[in-house]
Image 1 (spheres, rainbow, N blue to C red):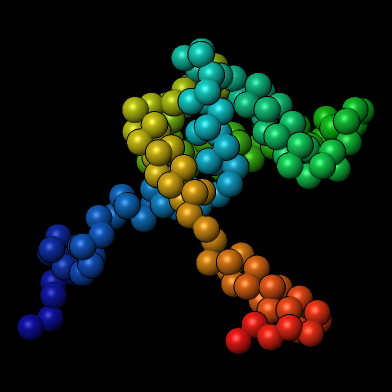
Image 2: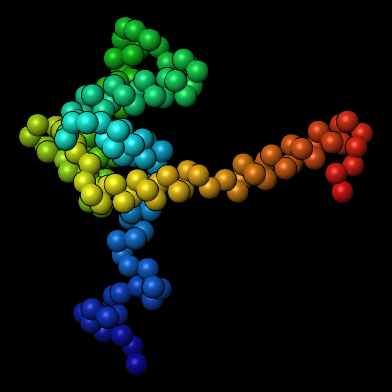
Length: 154
């Protein structure tokens, strides 16, 4: 018998995964969204303005890139503006959709929710796990170094 499309049971996923789980992992998949959750968690204030959040992320990116970003003038303003726009239209709404943050559109402020704290714990677990690709790269690099030095790694 074919499933009836209007039947709610036929629309549920066959796997044990609930529809919300995938979107939560999607929200945590982006490095910048994880940085937003960490920043909100570290702050004493209840909510943070999008401009303050953008400033923090630009400075964090600059530190991660070894100071590669422009430190003043129009280039810095452009970078801050691009980060603020992606926060406003992409990252914060995605975090709000999964309940990780409360976003006040009128005041342009973001606050971490209890659900966000739970997701942050998951994000910390994700970041603590060694990346399989980077582990393979390290192993391949070690093998290549061993061959270059004339030693066998077998």
